[in-house]
Image (cartoon, rainbow, N blue to C red):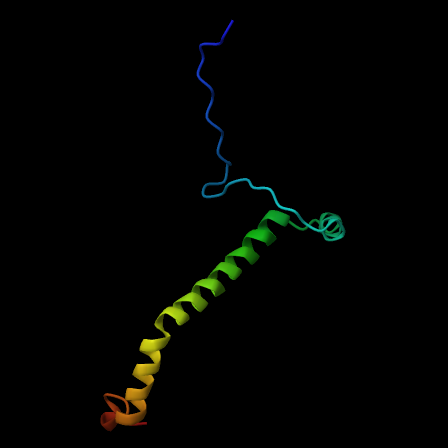
Length: 88
């Protein structure tokens, strides 16, 4: 006999904006982290956040390198736009 109740949707993590995932970590490092009561999820999240931030910055710099180089050439030849009025 087949059940007529619909399947339950997968429960979300109690923390908003987070999702469970699987990671493969070195056994020795994982064991030491657990012995030291290190919150592995938090450390991974923080480090991944920083890696993403750096990758986004690098990508932005690559995408805008031509404009930045052109702007720097203008500044080198013409100076800063308000250079004549600065008092320092």
